[in-house]
Image 1 (cartoon, rainbow, N blue to C red):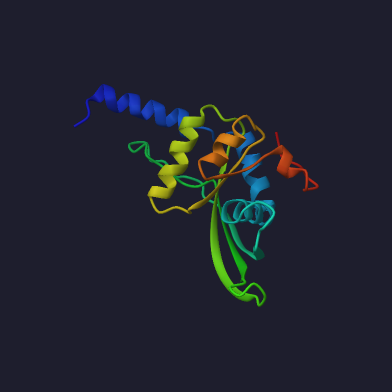
Image 2: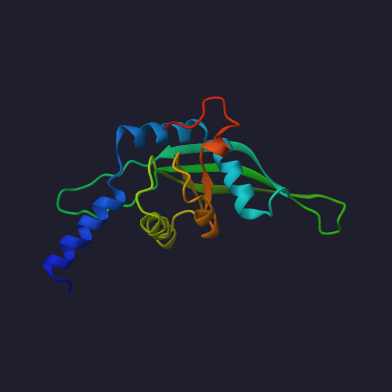
Length: 174
């Protein structure tokens, strides 16, 4: 059993890791919902196929849902994705090298919005916790803070930041 001091320290760490719900966070979350199709297509292509060889294409957006957390005063553990994107995809498989067999699928992409990345380690622990608890296996971090792009991608997650957002007309909120 944890001591009261250990529990208090754990809750303080949780506040630091998950306490980023600010107006900047809300603006980034809304931006992600509006650009869900592009973000999901980028993440699926980056994580599922070698670069420049994406064979899976996103056909349509099913939904982009912001999952705002409800927090009871007596219970501090709340874990919800910032945005959950459901898309219909099509994959073209060429077993003989010529004929394309089309497979339609439904994919879920989880989005973690970070106006600023305080701690790389806390971010990775947060995303892994989502995956362990049954969240989407395809995860993308959306942030104007691009200091950890290589490290995030090396962990098996996509990163969508200012460089990737150049393809969009409304840019990435900062």
